[in-house]
Amino acid sequence: MLSRKYVKRVVGEPKDLPPPIAKKLENRARRWMVAIEWLNKPENKDYDTPSRIAASGVAWGDEKDPEEIEAIQKRVKEEKEDIKRKKVKEEVEGGGKRQKANKGKRKRYPSNQYHLPQVSTNSMTWPTYMIRTEGS
Image (cartoon, rainbow, N blue to C red; front, side, top):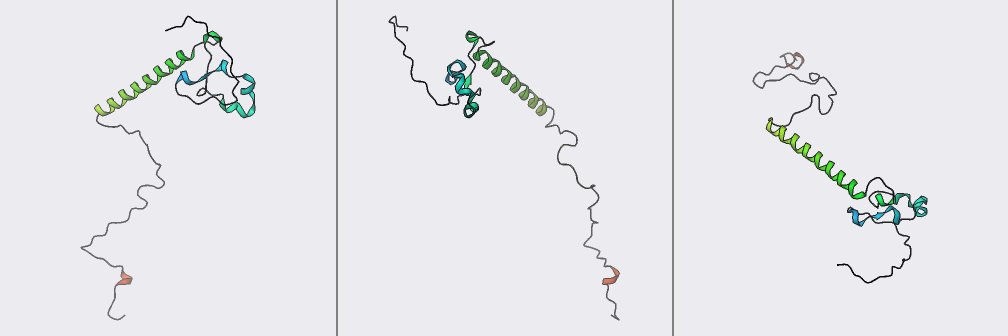
């Protein structure tokens, strides 16, 4: 409900605090709200990120409004998730996950280099130097 009564707006004191990090667009500061001189200081360069400051919008000369940009990003993210879900569904229907050829760790040694001969417990054969003869 709009009030018909005129309210005088008073400009508050400028804040020397960094804009807070916000996930929602309505909680972010717009570019026109932040002094350019403050952002150009070397100690404040870290705060000039999209998670803290959103674009001003078409009314301030930008190509798109931040709401449009966010809607496009959300749509692209959903499309990627749909593609991923379809891929997983196809793999499940196809009989499990498909392995890529040569995927995994690289073999350091040929596969037969360290194979030891199988020794049967039924027939014990001793090397000749270990067989005791009666004269020794």
